[in-house]
Length: 114
Length: 115
Image 1 (cartoon, rainbow over the protein chains, first blue to last red):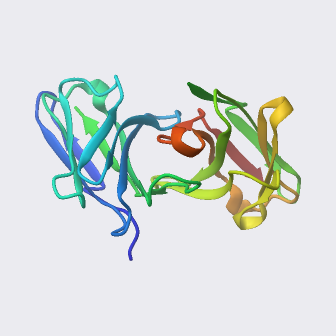
Image 2 (image 1 turned 45 degrees about the vertical axis):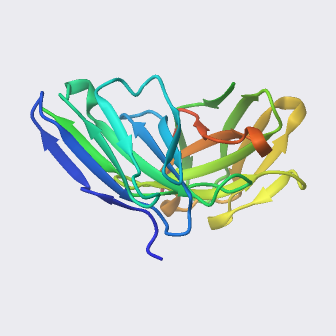
Image 3 (image 1 turned 135 degrees about the vertical axis):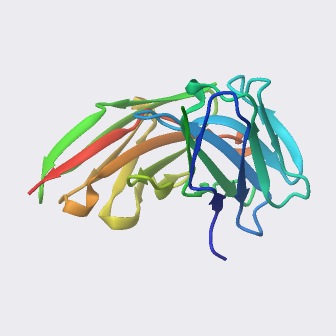
């Protein structure tokens, strides 16, 4: 078990382009979470999955954002028509499920929109 | 609904001095409380957590925190700061039991350790 993996670590894109990030959770964890963190702020919840079902989405997740977890394993987060305000660190975390578990976070993907 | 307030966005301590980071929470259900640490360009690492039972919880790297329900607080302390403690620290809350889904984080406190 190598923890939560995120790819890529860094992404620079031009405004208006689409980007996709990948997260591989700990294999036995059935819950997966996406958070966004801007400079100097705490992480903000975007969405979470239990297995392949997307159970909650934040209103921060505009129509340009979509997340999937097709087989209940890895997840992707896509941002269409990127804007400069999308520049942030995108963090993925996983947990075994409900209960007193903390999350295990990945190292994040830092997105810079120029 | 739940929220977290961390008092002080920056804290500066001398090596060997007490580290005290303040966290107050709001939760409509009995909370689960967490402290995470983040080093530059890395994800968050769990320091410690409170769920039920003993209100004084010990974590990694010599940190501990005390849950005070009457004060809705979960302050983090370490008796003697080390240079390696320089990082950003986040307090987080989650509803316990069936209400528990997402973590809600505070804004973070950056710790600077002076030699």
